Length: 466
Image (cartoon, rainbow, N blue to C red; front, side, top):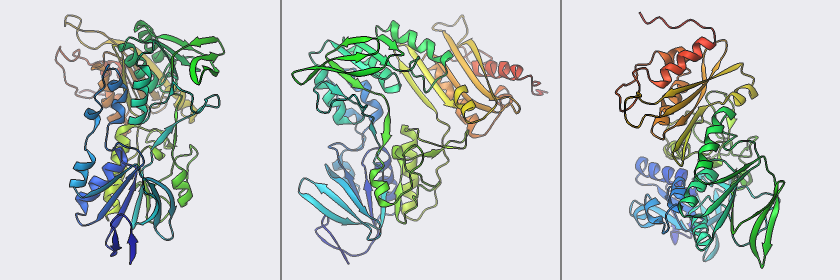
């Protein structure tokens, strides 16, 4: 019989699950485990003050002069406790003894040891802190958690200028959000293009143009060398192209997996530094599972393990882990790297591999760009849609796709993602029976036209329609 400080009594040996992390993967796992086993004791330790919220919505909340943080919360701690989940906020798990099957938890009342039968590590990611960062300098922020967003909101009140360091998804979304609040925004990116790691240059160029049309001072190919400060507060950014004066700095140069706890428990880490799990979300340590942003996953196109933190991936892995921790047999199918974002009036989406990524993993790939229309020219609101398809030269297999256009138009990326999951070819895509009506598309949808052009570029005969 083991003692549980949480229960305040002896633990009688019934199934006891401990979940470390109470956001996407962690709460998905706990909720699914509760459905699968109504009698299990399920404890969730979250080191922050918020649980079960949509972190992807943080930039959009920050666009409001008075953000309503509660709208981002899917379930309150009280609601979760009402479902039989023991949610403990501001409790950080600092150690794991995998042999004894216990965790060390530090909370407001000090540290204690808690037993588990099955342990899920869903500790997510943290923002990368560059070497030039100055710990504790006022006015310098990252954006990963609800607490981060609230601190940034407080900092920009009364500010006039913001410098965002990093032109990825978060940096671009924040640029729009802070422009909406009337701030002067400078976007500093070391690469030659914004979103350069996610998009090929041909697709990134119109994204940059749209950001500049939105009033953002975009500076690419610049290296940050340090921060200026006075009286403990940031005053600007020293770059390879000169000094940029600012009142607030947001560092958005990437994330790293919070894998320290998993590594200490004996879990294997991949090359990216994230946790390596099998298709059941099981680590190499008996009784220890991992899910969400802290993990590497198998990419279904490249067949390699990658670290691509995305919301659906985290929630799906959490569900799989929750089922399996209670004796089920669910499998995580891997990803194709589908992402989508909006910046000002433009939607941008990608899936699979870019041309650069395909070549980097040794594939003989070809990319074909098509400038098309998302709707007939006579229908109000029609606009250009840029489609880039990446295919394998010899087989015609679709390897990836990128779209830039109106926000609703780029949701076509889901068709490409489905094709990638099925390992389909551009001929398969060209033969799809897609919906048509003038408010939504041309009679030959942009994807069908792009697929046909790509097939011809590969020198392959068209499919037999008869």
